[in-house]
Amino acid sequence: MSLRRPCSPPGDGVLLRLHTLDCVSSSPPLTSLAKAGGCAAKYPAARLETLLAGIVPPEASDLLVGLDPADDAAVYRLDDERAIVFTVDFFPPLVDDPRTFGAIAATNALNDVFAMGGAPLLALSIAAFPEELPSEMLGEILDGAREAVQATGAILAGGHTIRDDEPKYGLAVVGTVHPSGIWPKSGARPGDALFLTKRLGTGIVLQAQREGRAPAGALDAAIAGMLVSARAAAAALRPFAPNAVTDVTGFGLLGHAYEMASRSGVRIELDADAMPALPSARELAEEGVRTGGDRRNRDYAGPHVESTASEADEILAFDPQTAGVLLVSLPADKGAVLKATFASGGLDVFPVGRVVDGAGVSLAGFASG
Image 1 (cartoon, helix red, strand yellow):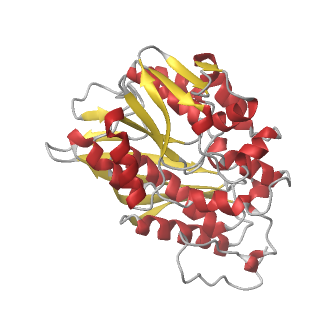
Image 2 (cartoon, helix red, strand yellow):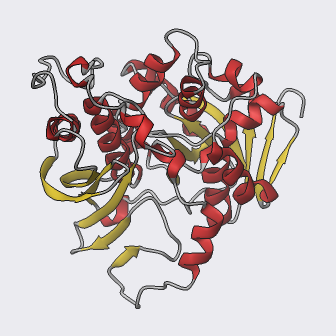
């Protein structure tokens, strides 16, 4: 395959607008080469939990966060003032524009570092690419990723690329955090309030787009949301010293809430009426649009969830997210100031529930239950 002409890079930043790569019309759409795109392609959480159960790292006092329990990233202490945060994340394409795909994949990986309370320093590309596709397309993916990495103050310093029939892209990211400033997902406490920093529904909208059912503007809104880094939200959150934070991605809100609840030894109550949704996402859920990840997430978290919510709200809560939101747990008496701080910075934050004694997760409208 060949390009009609080389692609010229856009001049105004991948995080502020979408780039239409009409110069590669002779190549098949990226999404046509993927069985599942974005974080919906994650390995089933239930199988992963079983697989990792037998992999316990050796005792190491400086390994502050590893597999026991697993979190959004590993954390290793260097000294009393510094620890490194290390994560890796990659997936098949979820949009056809290569530059936008690279930016979303990079944002998704970088967000793991922010979810731990850290700041990214260095990233390496992980890429798989069919030889038959033009090298210019891979260049666009890398350019989109580079712009996303640089926007967080980090450096994209290299990587590794292999041949594969299904394109895949992501990053390995190293960052830093103060050893006493780590945000684990295992620290939620009864009396905490719960907040989300972005809207839900990326999987639903992307699935509707594949089915030709997405209303006008829905895909653009979902892409714009996925391109928003967690950097600003994490910076606004840092002075509040949250008890627990996790990055809501492929396991959906309910899957990640269950992980937070089980590892913290608490019960999480989510307000179905308060869940923030991307434009058209809730309406598409009411029409029954859902990804294959919905079923896998229900298999994983469903036995631990009590729900009196509508079917559409359950679909939204189980929906796998890509470059998703932060789920934040912090003392309820800090909630009002948190909302005011985010509002003053032009940032979204949505109160979605509370932490109580008990176990598991509930999903219900607070007004009715």
